[in-house]
Length: 189
Ligand SMILES: [Zn+2]
Image (cartoon, rainbow, N blue to C red; front, side):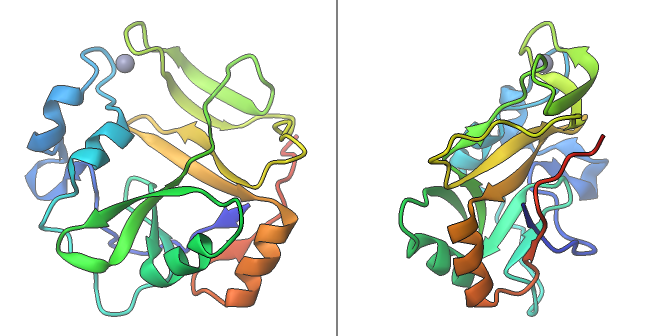
């Protein structure tokens, strides 16, 4: 697992913290009328708010306040140079040093798979689960799996957990990126 650094006072991407934590206006029409979640990739594809600027010193891999992964241009350069690694990036219009990043290989929640522990059931409209965390088993990754993310869910949005194969981990370790920690993908129970 590729674990990002927890950064205090990281910005919210999708929500307006200045304004009672409402969904940002530009994404409002994407909300599910039942659970209020939005298609995060569609929202980010529209563009990230211009009011987000990061402090001078930030790690290379960290989370937004709603737990969405952000990488530095340095880490993007390392990932882009790796064979078979495919990542989708969303630029910050006011800070070219960072990108929201989602691996192309996304593993959605499957409530029948024991790799996921689902809480709160499924939304009747968009079918997304309310919350989802580690289950009792490991997700059966394909033998040719390279880099991807398990799409865990929080009450308000998706929360990707990056997983990389041994080769990727070795290359990323060598790059000595700040904030990036490595943990084995482990069983909880
Ligand atoms: Zn919904």
